[in-house]
Amino acid sequence: MVPDGEGLKAAPLRRALIAFRVEGGAGVGAGHVRRCMTLARELRDRGAGILFVSRSRDDSMVQDIRESGFDVIELSAVAGSTRSGPGTSQIADAADTNRALAGLGVDCLVVDSYALGASWEDIVRPNVLRLVAIDDLADRAHCVDVLIDPTVDRADRYEGLVEPGTTLLLGPSYALVERSFRRSAPDADSRELRQLLVSFGSLDGDAHGLRAVEAIRATLGKDVGIDLVLGRHSPHLAAARQVAAADGRLALHVDTDDMPALMAQADLSIGAGGTTSWERACMGVPALVAAVADNQRLVVDELARLGVALSVPSDARFDEEAGAALRLLWRSPGILGAMAAAGRRLVDGKGARRIADLILPPSLSVRPASSEDRALIFSWRNDPKVRAASLSTDEIPWEAHCRWFESALAHEETSILVGEIEAVPIGVVRFDPLVSGYRVSVYLAADAHGRGYGAWLLRAAELWMIASGRRGAVSAEIMAGNHASVAAFEAAGYVQRMTLYERVLQDG
Image 1 (cartoon, rainbow, N blue to C red):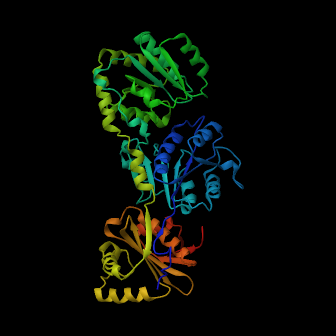
Image 2 (cartoon, rainbow, N blue to C red):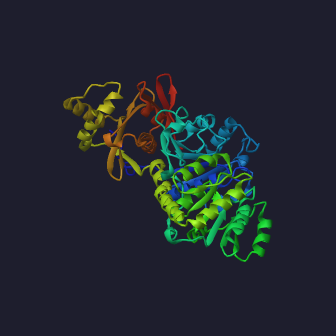
């Protein structure tokens, strides 16, 4: 019979640990880090532990993450890790990441780096319960459980680049926008171009911000107010200070922590097609947008197509085209209202919430089955989906099930564990004794399929077994073609050996 001691009746899954593998800084920009921190805050607010992992040589980026209250592991400081910089091979970086996270029990790892793809993911994936990639290029293969791309809702972009069964979270509904940007700017229908916001990122290497200021002054004159945003490491900061000192209607904001307030008072924003695009749209701020990096081209084209922004080139034509767009908006202020409304329709600012709902481990616990669970487990086991994936596909008669169930409950070494989320049963895990170790099987309630619960349920059941003093090898036999079960067992750390999937129960 299963143990029934104090503390073993319900074994909860421990506090979830979510790790982020991300880079940022000179040459990479701040967008990757910003959107990861947005998701990290949402997950932290839900009780998850957060850890960042980076190889970046940009100390300011690491400092920004730490100042936001998150721990950071710098790969160059991990014993045994490769000492080279951001150009390190994917295989070496994956090995270093595995070393950094070893023994921490990471439930979900989010990777956001254009330099990392399937080669890296294939090495890291067996060591975490769930692997998530954030991408917007669709230019490389991925070996992940979940892929997030907020640019466009087009699954065909990843055809042949992801495995069957990969969950795709696509389109602006999954844009990672901080909660502070979910307040609306003033009604654009009544706006005129009185106050403009200019922001091309923290570094703005090609000085698009200063060029935009010149275009505004040449087109709209000196009475228009301008807020110019730059970072303290921008190579053009000194020049911007000089321009601001000579222009009483130009306010320079260095590393501002209140972009929402600046957007809220802006009649128009001029900027790049990066992460800020979703923030502007969410707040209903009309925009002139330039793709200052190749990965921004698709975003800018999509914003223009949907009427959220006007597109201007980022090359030598920028100054002239920006001036022409400003003249158009000055003569036709109704366009501002149309862009604002289109932006609000496109982005509601709840992307982090939606993603967290899908990747955060559920508040799942397991308890030993009792006689009262007989009928429930009978219905689960005879569900057509469960039978189709079982070694025996025959429907089990009630009498045969009752005999087996009572016998299993009475067996000293057999453990039947019912998984629950908020006291609602969602599945069952059974450990049957072998000569050495256990054979494990798991199946879910009909309405729990397709939610990724399998791996979490397995892990919770293992923790219960460990707490009850059970140790040793555990194996599972999975039918060929049962991709969902293979994914769940591999996510839970099981390794294929011939026709079985195996794992060793041990602490940690």
